[in-house]
Image (cartoon, rainbow, N blue to C red; front, side, top):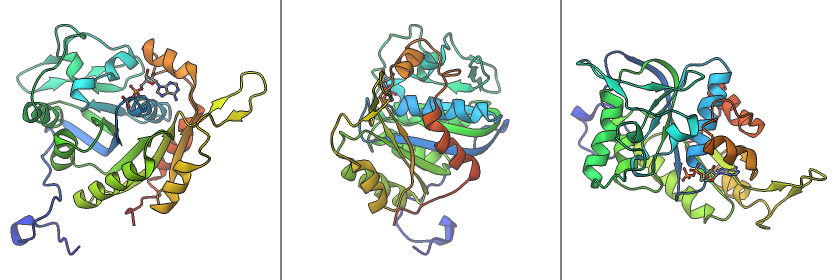
Length: 276
Ligand code: ADP
């Protein structure tokens, strides 16, 4: 509560991040971590849509794929091949539209090879994606965190200077519990929560364009957002176009109007909630 951001003179036990320095040739202005309670809710899709939306606005955007064992970002952007490096560091891959990407999948001989490393090695890799990669100039970096609140997300928040966290959830998830966990984690790490993106929340009737809430639980996510004082940044329907774009490596170019409100809020830098 009384953090003076000087850990040398403070005897408190806390989880406030003592972040590592990025590579000396990296100038990264804003870092936003995208989290979810479990896999398959569209966290990587939302991460790539956000990076792409900021890129379309004219910002230099980047994705650090910290979902080491479930890395899907390169495929979504149609990027493959091994990352190149020099004595100074590793160079990120670049998507067609110019989004910089680093992912464990770009270090594998075969993108279908499984990653069978244990937690600490995986966590260390994420750290190196921050410290050893020559990111150059980046306005907005989005981190695709692994789902849940395990080792790796903890490393992300302890070693990378994250400016804000976005939670992705679907209406079927136990939204309240997931959001509460994320709020608690953000508070422990002293990182602001930017808000919630509700994904696969409804479908649009192809004939009359009427919204159909297939999960029939009304505005569950909105209610939870309100309860925790978090903005609902975007509501994304189930949209086959997004699957096609992700599978076809077209995350760069897909038009997704639903993500625009979230991108506008990120651009404005507000509102930021402390989760209380
Ligand atoms: P996560 O990162 O949470 O595991 P992904 O982003 O990989 O989830 O998404 C899981 C699957 O759901 C992917 O096939 C993706 O294309 C699809 N998907 C995600 N969001 C949507 C959406 N709004 N509409 C349709 N399909 C979606």
